[in-house]
Image: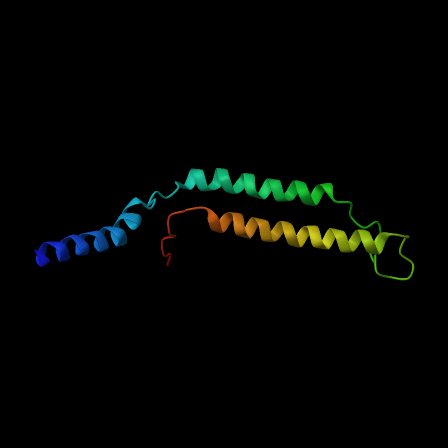
Length: 103
C-alpha cells in the first residue's frame, strides 16, 4: 500500500509542524500582572544603582576631583547602563497584550 505510507508520512510531517505551535503558550499577561512584574524588574535595577557608590564631586573627571572619584564615576556609569539594559530586556520578555492604537 504505497498510498497508506504516503498518508502516514504526510500526517507525521503535518504533526511535526503544527504540534509545537499548538502547544506554544498564547497566554498574555493582564495589565495588573505586567505592572506588578515590571515594578519588580525596575526596583531590582534601582537597588543595584543605589548600592553603587556615586562620585563625590560635580566633575569627577576634572583636575580638582577627589582621589578615586574618576573610578567611582566610571563604575557608576557602567552600573547605570547595565541596569537600564536589564530593565529593557526584562520588560521586553513580559508577554503583555499588544497596545491599542490611540487617536
